[in-house]
Image 1: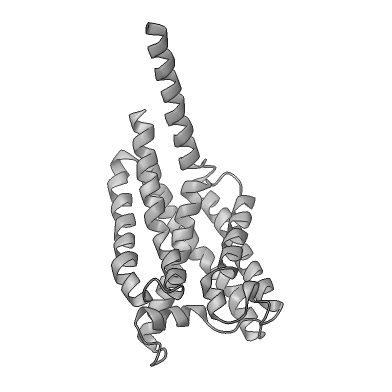
Image 2: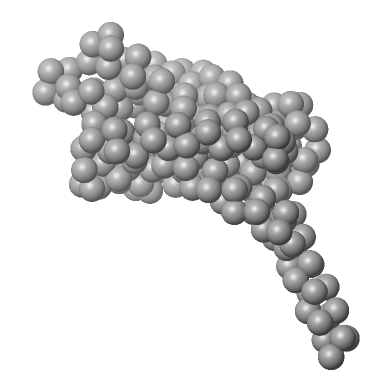
Length: 235
């Protein structure tokens, strides 16, 4: 029970830290602080924390270490697929602007000054880290057995984005319908491309791996039932 519970706790901690990156941008837009401050207080420590867990788990829980490393790589590469669709949609006039550039000026507190090379690098780096973080979450939470699960996962992320404070702040309404029907179309296709690429790459890198979270919950509960049955039989 201890091994299952310990792995479950470590996985939960990795999931919590990986989820910080994708959430601080909408949190900043919602008024919970500036992205510049939230990045210093939450984003950087969370990235360090994920890296530390991966390194410490190499000997005690190599499955977690491999899942974090390969999941991050799969998510980062899959972001390229997302960007291929998004940039095409932007040039066709279906998207109002470049989100990575916006994130960059907010990260470096240059909103009034506008983007420069440093802010663009920061914004794109943050964008790809978010892709890597979603890759880590996917592998740990969903597993890699079914490629199509990546598609569903990507679409869920896309819908979450379109109802988030980020899209609301652009003044285009829920799902961006006040901008054009092309907005939700491009966002959905971009996140579908991300999800398909993520599902395929994660399986390619890790094979058919079940959800670590669900498997460890079953293992922990199974041991708990066995221990309870044994204790009852001895009375």
